[in-house]
Length: 214
Image (cartoon, rainbow, N blue to C red; front, side, top):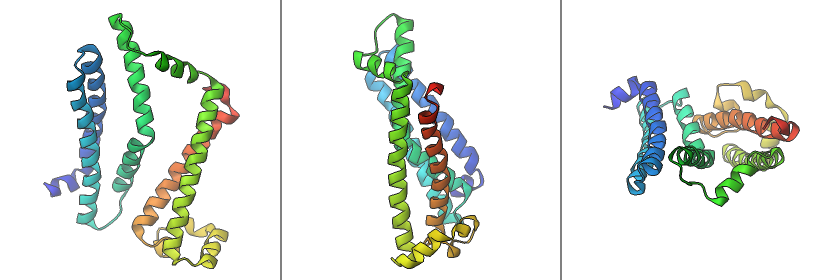
């Protein structure tokens, strides 16, 4: 079974992602069309189970290969997203489904609070402020973890950390021994997180400079 997972890791991951997405849609169908709230929870549990299984799959493959690969990094990004920003995106999807299904059924599934929030999300200034705050929070968390990673990797040598900060040529290396990180795992996580952080930070701040795009 483990050999099959290692050999077909991408196929398994993509299959799980498709099933996860379908389970969220079925959650809305069962809850708001069939009006079976208790049964709909099963699809949320299925989504959570698949998320946990993906994390376990990444660990199993790491134990088999002993290396950090693109596959493990991608799963890490997906799992972290699902546990953070994914929660808010699911809430938006839930409101969208209630709005569409409620209109189709001719019933009111949205609360006044939902409509107020949806109206705010169409306000460019509100969206810009929300994304600005999100970017700052991400910056603080990212910086704190980087400091912790560096402190661990350099043994708390402040002078050595400053040297790494002054000369960033090590960023392009594939050898963690040339970096301020303690091992290959932390180095891989830090590098992928750095890329995700830069993209997310610039995207979030773009709403501040170009609020009309929202």
